[in-house]
Image (cartoon, rainbow, N blue to C red; front, side, top):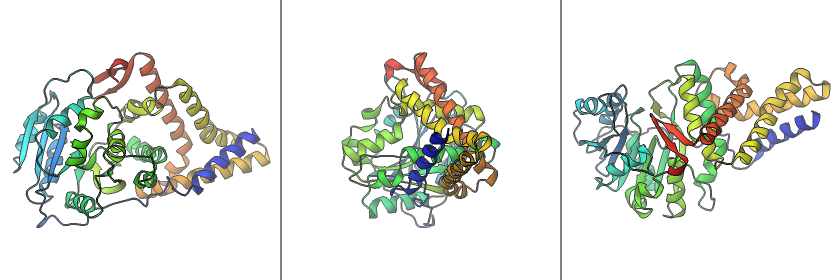
Length: 372
């Protein structure tokens, strides 16, 4: 037990000391451009929407406050709740509503919808925006300014959680914390690094770079489509990319525990390359760094308890920047080990789906192994 505790403490300390600081929140962007006078004729928004009638009106209303000449294409992905009707009621200038054709084999629904919209775009930049995300006034102009002045082919923002319900306030910041550990933002920004990351909910991309990789058809079956897109842009189109945190784009839904569970399970086993060997290794590491320190603190000897306490201090220290960024209550900090265990169980769910022949589930669709 003592050696396990020493190893756990060493791993958390190493995480704090690595130069790319994956736990930090320094990569961030907020809207700093007012909507008045903003000329957005170079941007077309693509908004894929499948059963989003409860939120799409607010999303479009937020886009109406971005500036002039913004073009918006809503692609209705076989909704059965009147999503297209609600979108049409927004009556925005420059708004087009498309009906996505039936989903062909080998495509995920979102990418198929986005490809239909891409074929209609004539502007040099495309903003991919989920229908359940609100954007602050001027954010589109801020994204465009960064892309143009820093010569970036892709700029994306991790939309902030709604932070309203219990599970939302507790688990969503942890989800973003884990995402940053898996896809370190600083390494993603570095041209010489093989790492690439993006957040597909709010993502500005050069139309030319997107065309260079073959459009969304180049990643048509991807489950983690945003990071796959970033990798293709960075490595195949040789485009610079940037990803950051923000409060200027916010999720409008407060997910239940079931929603969070399904969201994580949708991609967790994909991140492990559908390998049960990597699943076992992941489980061993998660138990070591999250569970063993708690056990050692409760049942260890004096030396073991001190080592366990040190591991927990290092662990929570790595999480504090994310927790503070989202104004998470301090009680949630102490629950990080329990959240880590919950995310491990979500990963097991993802692997169980795969074992039953389902690669991923989302928005009422199941994608089988043969579709990958």
